[in-house]
Amino acid sequence: MTTPFPLLRLPRLALIPVFQQMESIDVIAISMLSKKANNVSKIFRKLSVCSVNMIVDNDHLDVSVRFEWCTETGLKYYFNTENAPNLVNGMFQEKMFNHENTGLSPSQWLERVFDVTNCESLEEVDLCGSPQLEMCDTLALLTKVCNLNITKECSDSFAKKSLEIVSPVTTEISLYRIPFETREEFQTFLKSNSNYLYIYSHFSTFTLNDFLVTNALKVELRQVEWSARDISQFLTNWFHSKHNSRLEHLSLRIFDVFNETCLPRVLKAVPFPRDPERTFFYSKPLNTLSESFRGGYDIRRTDGKKATILFGTFYEQMSFDFYLWPCFV
Image 1: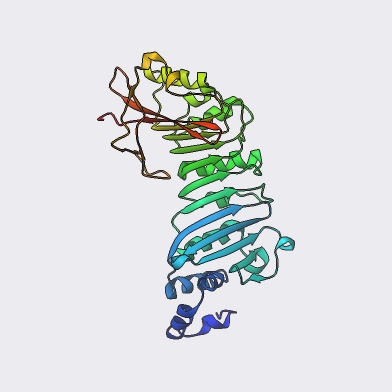
Image 2: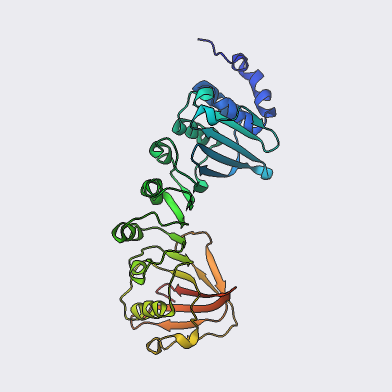
């Protein structure tokens, strides 16, 4: 059986220099032609990828592949043929794909991209809309994601389905909207063993009780309506061993005033000198392996667990950080 693509009819020795001189984006494009083309692409040109990012929009997938020497390639798969521009963007090195010119479904196309680029993980996945096609099979291909971003434009139904599929393999989850309709749904999500949870949303019903069931190692809350009283209650709960989740670091920014004078007396907080600098190491790799800081206030529970509280300002907001040290410190 002969291939309809003349290049692949060449002998293997003749194909080697051809593939070696190709641009990376052309190697990926050829791999879409057929299974044979995909196998030939992998044999004669092993692509070295630094990072891969993916955006899921209303009408297309947008995959950005960064190679060595900071060369970046853009790949777009359009769900509907009429929405797909019939062009190649040479300035930004972008190629447009759809079912008509590849014969592949979104999940098959993405699997082919992962295969030819030897991609083992995605740096970022941004959900920026409500896709016109069912995306469960496509999302199920993701086996390791560093950061999953739920943007304001993502619909609640798609966000919830995506979190259900992708969150178990994701290091960091960033919510720019809360897609859950009820507190029960929201707290079920919060109880999952995520490593890093970032919330940037004006969500007034995110209460202290919601946070107390959160089971993430690191929690960052931005634009969440907490008060100084909420923080004091959290610290008191922790001191009396009423909060024993996996939490290692809580970072807050609030508009209320909260500083060392607001600390509950029961904590018996001890100020730590600004010298020397201290370094806090997370138990698992997150967006960073460690955090370094100076000063702060140390508190210790009766069971020996120690935490450090840091205060600061960020523009017009108060910043509050709570670090829970390992038991041996």
